[in-house]
Length: 230
Image (cartoon, rainbow, N blue to C red; front, side, top):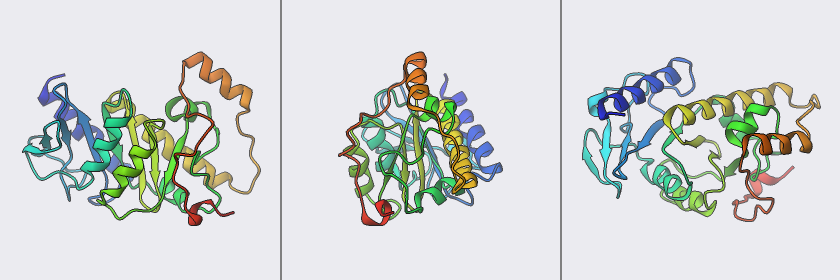
């Protein structure tokens, strides 16, 4: 895909996310990894609904700005996930309300934020890890993501929002939307004892679609008292 078309695609998807209320104001950021190892990213303090393709931040493989506006302060977050997640070619980070709400609930398991509620959640996300709260732009969040060793394509930052990697921009956007819809389902059904997919049903999806779920051992997921207490 040409540079011009890729810029237009970033702006088109970003505007769609904004117009549907998935990330308000100037929150959220989107990036795509380029063939030369560099990145296109949305600028800092920019609304995803009103991006200018020509002003997107162009970074080199070391995260240094080459052209365009100053990039999002979440550059370390993006590069940490690119560096550790095989096949990651695009990343979407939103402040979508239901995903943020889930990150604040006391019963959430940091190793698996949501249970296997639907086939498409398993197919598009597998599992989602919850990381403790970090100040937005804090370089420490990059270290926490690296600590996951690339086992998760989707990460939920406590009291902040989701970060989702995909093999393409549309894949990352669709997976982020699936996470938000599943979080909304969870909140709607919380306390109603809904039926989840069984282990056998999940295993069938894994075999049929050749999925790679995080391993059973979850010691690499950071735990905090605030997010693991019942």
